[in-house]
Length: 239
Length: 239
DNA sequence: CGTCGCTTTGACACCTCTCAAGGGGGGTGG
DNA sequence: CCACCCCCCTTGAGAGGTGTCAAAGCGACG
Image (cartoon, rainbow over all chains, first blue to last red; front, side):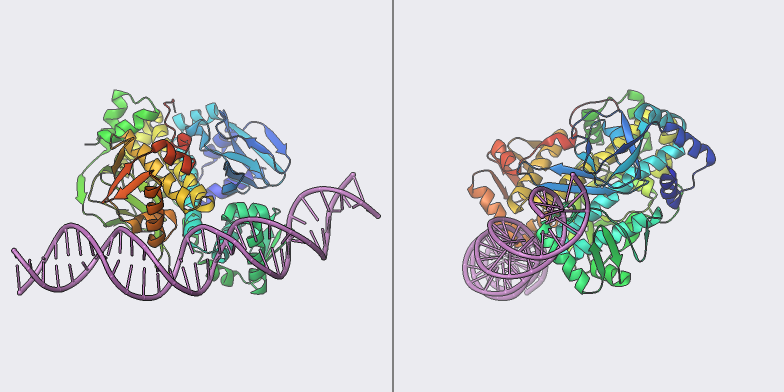
């Protein structure tokens, strides 16, 4: 069930059998949780990182006036909080957006990896820098793209990221979240997201309904978003 | 001249003499460059990372319509592109905002560190995850804070980050950039940044003029920004 | 069959952008 | 030494994108 993670890693690097075994050895308990459950609170001391194997999760920050900004969406195969290994406690919270299955990776075991397996350590390090690449692209969206482009861009990103782990095709993917959650990713209100989705639908590009994204015109969608997947580092390299 | 970097590291962790020596050994040539010089282009293959010792730099992405989003500002002591060690090539460009002095850290030397010095490796890894923390806070600003709060927040962040390396006090700091650059950080137009700065000035909070930030009311400014420096991880911990 | 959460739509407000013009300061060349 | 120029800052007027408020529709579920 952790195969999605190795799928994701192997898109970007060569992972030896020994490394795969070591990484599997890092993992401990499997836990299931319902949707909408905040299982890492801001500032909380963490002794393990969380590998997501099923479902969608989000990193988010709350503001004093009740607003919320989601800073990252996690798909199966992602370490949701590998960065807590170096940070110790997080500057944000992490919640499940759908029912999720996770596997824990205790930090003391990760530490052993970093002390014995340099290449695998670089692969894990890369994984956190890849998260940062996505953060930067979201900054660009939030800062410079209008609501339509921004929404289209997120849908394109998720198509690629879910596609890597076999959960999306060019025709679409399951995205069982509400328009309100989408709005919290996009720095918009749910009312406006609704209007934008209508516009994308009427343009014949993509339809988001009932937790399902149906892509009718992927090139068209990517054109609207000016989507360039380079920031997702899909090519295989040695780290 | 690389002392600012060790100042920054030592705020967050214990660095042994041996580790300091190893890190100094990683560094090679010192280079000076003028303001406004893009010295890392998007997608370019990189064989070294860049430690900034003097001046300000920015990571940015250009959009097809000529807009630009700055995703991060670097202050002295920062590795501007340590993440290129694991990424190999960057998804964004890096430029000098002011005249800068940098020191290069060849990747093959960094690799030796990651194969022999686990703790120092984690410290370097931490440094890239700290960048990601700042990216996330910028996402929150860009997505949820209005122009006034957003501007105030950036000025607070720079006060702290420059303060760590002795380049800011509670009374202010040098910030020799234009309002246009500020706008490219904040996802605004320079015209609107100008209006916001006027509002902050007339509220008696802060004055930005001639490349100098004069803070007249730091608590007031932090209140407007709802600034909480937790995301900058100012406490010392073992990584 | 009622309730509750999510979606959808409309009218209007407001924040930020766009376009435009003028002012100021520093550098450069005559 | 002065004049000019260029870049940046400043301000105004109007436009437009997104938010706010409100109400109705819809579907899942008990």
